[in-house]
Length: 194
Image 1 (tube, one colour):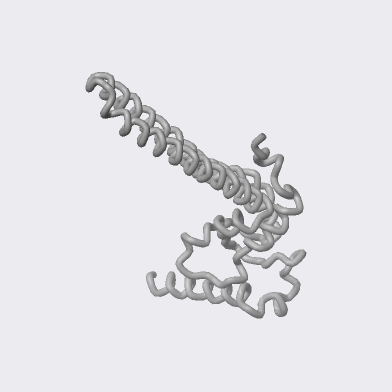
Image 2 (cartoon, rainbow, N blue to C red):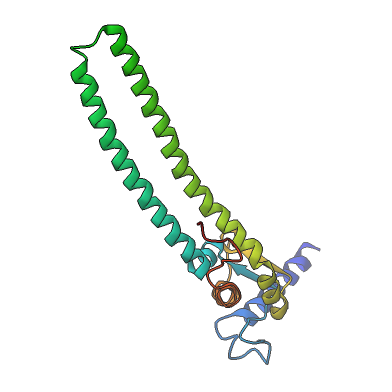
């Protein structure tokens, strides 16, 4: 029984590799449909889908710009805090200990609050990137379904989870092309911040 199962699995793998191998596009006996490989299993790279799509590139530009703004703001705040710290240090000699302690505590609280605020801004940028990835994958479902149906496939797998496959079953480039055609920079997927 096991020997028979191995023979069936081996034959299925051989047929799969023959249909999807490097020469499949030229020798597929008419199996290609609109430039989409015919295979029961397809793979996609979600990272490439995001980073190569016009939507992902727009989000990357927006996040980069916001990151620059946060970094500039951090430098400005740091300069202001250093000046305030120097002033407080100079006042130490002229203030009563209780008054100096109150001012020093207020300064420390201000520093901690500013640090929390700036850290939250940085975290928010990371979350925005993840939200954009999820939004793209959700919006891309109909496109991926169309590609799957055109290919005669029964599944589209994340390429990272596949141990071994031929490159011809990777539909990432075709998916990016169709997603760009349908969504452009993705204002309907995730509007640009105002």
